[in-house]
Length: 139
Image 1 (cartoon, rainbow, N blue to C red):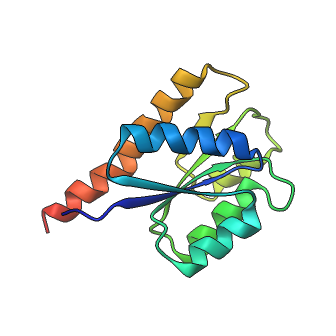
Image 2 (spheres, rainbow, N blue to C red):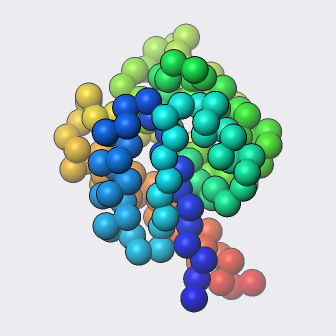
């Protein structure tokens, strides 16, 4: 039996996090989803282990997504990180994160329909997390 992928969703809007958690877990039987309400809590969870991937909001009160991304990649670079954002400007967190190597961003719910957001998240999960699981099967 394959190991479940443990995805951490980080967003200060807990209703939003729980909604995403339910949709992802209903769609993927091999993904376990846990949530954190902010960057500090999320980084503590990453430090404790058993987190394979992170889906994080950019804007949070205690730590922005760029700082969280930077901390995660410094601590454990193999953890995949996807950021959600409704904003894009040259001075924004998202630009800083991309300069640090962030590969993926999905727009937040303010910009697109929930169905489209979930489809984009599914695409990123399959592209990064499930592909790697298949690569490990070859070894």
